[in-house]
Length: 188
Image (cartoon, helix red, strand yellow):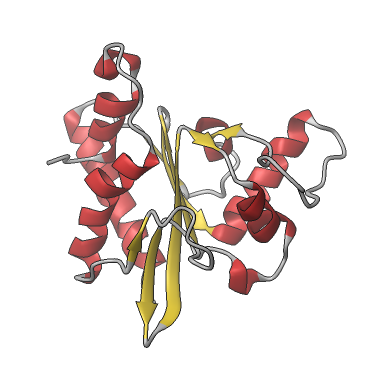
């Protein structure tokens, strides 16, 4: 079992931990790290986990209540790559009822946790930083602009980025802070 997100970074994102193996991807992060913590906090098994390609399901980890969408978490590992549909619906479209509730992104620098509105603001700022005057507009094909999770983490509001711990003690303390923030974020 993984004790901290810092341990996940060391084992599955760092070059030394991978030792020439490819990075396992966000589905691995969601199942090996995130879902066990969510279950510990809310004692609920998500109704959907990584429902890629399932229309109308908003997020990678999704909870329903009374047959209606209650809560969705979108997770990104290493790189933010939004499909045409995700980009158009979750970045271009301003109808918040069609957005995931929460963004969680993990990179080699640490982990970020924020509302989708906060993610959207940070993502637009990160893309616009290198493309002066850029504003989101609908795509007819492909993907939205890709950004490194590490780049985006620095654009998140204060208290939304949890850096990677340098040693086991610090990693455990940072993990506790992240779990406390996660519990507040999913309280619905």
